[in-house]
Amino acid sequence: MNMQIDAIAKTRAAISERLLITGATGFLGGSVAAQLIAYGYVSQLCFLVRASSPEQGLERVRTNLSLHGVGEVGRMSLNANQVICGDLLDTSWLEPESARLMTIDRVLNCAAVASFSKNPNIWPVNVEGTFAFAKAMSRMPRLKRFVHVGTAMSCGPDRDSLVSESWRFPQAEAQLVPYTASKAEIERRMRQELPDLPLVVARPSIVVGHRTLGCQPSGSIFWMFRMGLALESFTCDLEEKIDVIPVDYCADALINLALKRHLRHDLYHISAGRDAACTFSDIDQAYAAACTTQPVSERYQKVGVEDLPALAADFESRIGPGNPRLIMRALRLYSGFANLNYVFDNSRLLDEGISPPPRFTDYLEACVRTSRGVAITQQMQWDFK
Ligand SMILES: NC(=O)c1ccc[n+]([C@@H]2O[C@H](COP(=O)([O-])OP(=O)(O)OC[C@H]3O[C@@H](n4cnc5c(N)ncnc54)[C@H](OP(=O)(O)O)[C@@H]3O)[C@@H](O)[C@H]2O)c1
Image (spheres, rainbow, N blue to C red):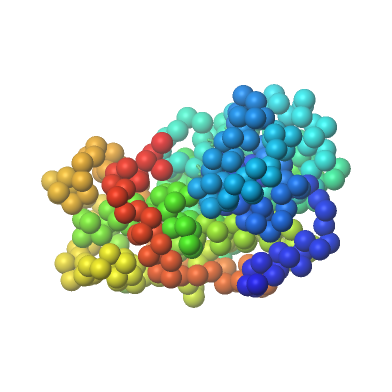
């Protein structure tokens, strides 16, 4: 038994509580659900799912669980009574579902519109709908903890790395994208306006792949590394670091934060931190080893954001067929975050006894293996749905 599971198992002995997971049809929420099933929590789980019936919601959760490696026995052990149908865009379901919500002890709130684009649902879902849900939960007498999944990038662009946890945010206009602005605003509102909510905010850094399943659960962001290496150019220096964690590590950390009896803080990074963040050069070498090719380091060129359009002539030959405007938009958006060169301090998390994260390069081979035969532009669809 590794340290991570050990901590969860110890916590479990004391509880027979009901856990509500939101976002279980997505990347993080799916991994949280898969891990909790693996740890024996099946009968205690409840899911908030967008669906027209509990049966359809259950089917959606099961389909995602299979991507997260949950076998038929685990998937079939869930039933439709565990599903609450609800959309954070229209929270009229909260009132009729209040009796069931009253039975919930702990919430793992993984639902959100997690998009860097200008999706009109970002603010209504991530701020208004999430606030209405959190407000309703704050009135539930059994609720012991509400773990809200934020994002470490909501700290804004002007922080010094190593970035430590802080409740201070820049003005919304200073945020790189509406998504991070929305994630900052909902944290601020819950904390200031819902004093009865037993809120713990967990802010993951950049979640890429799964330690053993690689990109099977989601190819989110991995395509960006493939793209930069295929182009042999990007806006980062090879010696700069990037803070990446695998989804199953993130899920275990979220579960620990949800179940642990006592926590020292109400805000945590879930990140690679100083010890496990990799340089782009490390990533280049691990990627080349996994592909049995040569690293691109000798040919690699760091370019400015203003130089990105010059790469477009090579898109087709290096990346494969795809919409050049979408590729350019993606390069611009993701370079904004990569250029921050942030590493997020994870000492609070480690001080809780949660095991240290792996390095991206430790499991990058699984991401390469599970991306074989998947075109870069096809994998990109995980983030441009
Ligand atoms: N992935 C990362 O690198 C990363 C890093 C830091 C923080 N985070 C945070 O982690 C959380 C989960 O992100 P993710 O990567 O797992 O995103 P994801 O794969 O896109 O999943 C999002 C989940 O939210 C649900 N959702 C979206 N709109 C909803 C609505 N109107 N009502 C109810 N549920 C809704 C989705 O349900 P449907 O299936 O019905 O659409 C899905 O289950 C987000 O809060 C995000 O900010 C992610």
